[in-house]
Image (cartoon, rainbow, N blue to C red; front, top):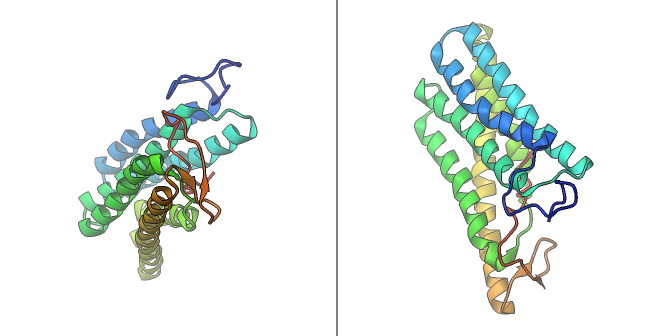
Length: 230
């Protein structure tokens, strides 16, 4: 358990003021700000540029908070949980507002949101079975999603067809990676459950081998899914 509060064990999901947690909170605060700025004048290039700046700043805090937390041993249970939630909220709302203004089909947004939040719920549910390997394409999916969303939020209709082709190519690649990595998670979860039942207890299959492990009665936090940029 983290000792980020000066040597005393951090309470389960307790909050500790430090730079990584402050960056996570900033990202959560920027989500509604981004939504308001984007929807205020969605077809005004100036407002779209400001919305893009806010989105990019929020995305960069994702990479920065994880790097600082690991480098300076400031990892906390609050950060482990809320960092992931803040990421999902930011990208999720970006997909939603793009669909609201008719620039992204709702079916695509719905499938992506179901995958993102469904896999998050799944990771909570399978904690009792043990440790699952980080998703192999998680970081790539997150990276491509970020670039696709930036291109769409930026808008820039004056650049013509070539920019439209690039941003839709990025979005389709992001969509395929999102679905494929989601299916991969389902297979890994099924494999973990089967190995756990056969072993009669929690197992660790993160290295491809079902090693028995002991899990705490109350898991400290959501295990890393390998989908963060940091």
